[in-house]
Image (cartoon, rainbow, N blue to C red; front, side, top):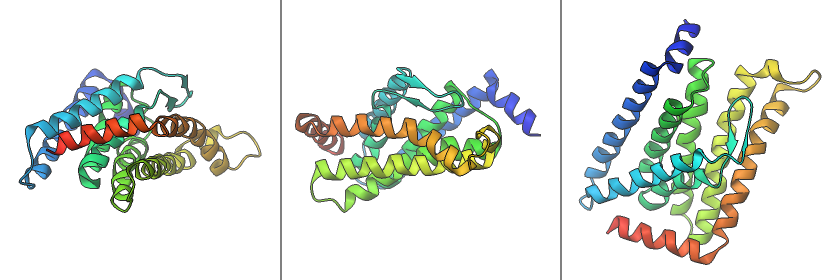
Amino acid sequence: MVEMFNEFGKSTAGRLVFAAIALLCMFAMAGLMSRNKKFSTKQLTYIAVSLALSTALSFITLFKMPMGGSVTPGSMFFVMLPSFWFGPGIGLLAGITHGLIQLAIEPQIYHPIQVLLDYQIAFGMLGLLPGLIMKVSRKPMIGMVLGAIGGVFGRFVMSTISGVVFFAEFAPEGMHPLAYSAGYNGGYNGVELIIIILFLCVPVFVQAVELVGKRARA
């Protein structure tokens, strides 16, 4: 059963299914946002552009891990933007959508639960937590930095759990699977987080994100 799922997920038909589900998630975001009287198709366009930028940057790999995961020039930050702009609910759906897009483009499939952990839940946390943290922050720059740390940490935790459960056999002899998985996933997530924080230390960059967010909500 698992082998059949793996073959389907890596096939053209499987990738089309994942892409279709991602599209449904976009419709779900539209439905959720439509409950807000300020909703407009412009806001959904901003989300789509943000995810498109994240997807484009994900192709620029500074370093690629052998069993999934890579360092990019800040692609994860653009997954967080809908959460910063529209709150954690929209951010969660945006993160799940991005995970499905990544699954359709370059699937790393070993088990159905592994797919959920590494793609939907991990990227879902990347979208959810920044918005939650941003809500309690009084200063945008601090909120974005803490939100980015929280979002990347959430993805790291989910990916580490997946590594312990499904990739323990790859741990070097004598090394605990948890240590191996934490080191593996912490490496690329940590470097990506440093890149994002460096961007957020530039006031002009933060001001630009704020300005675009205000226009998106207008």
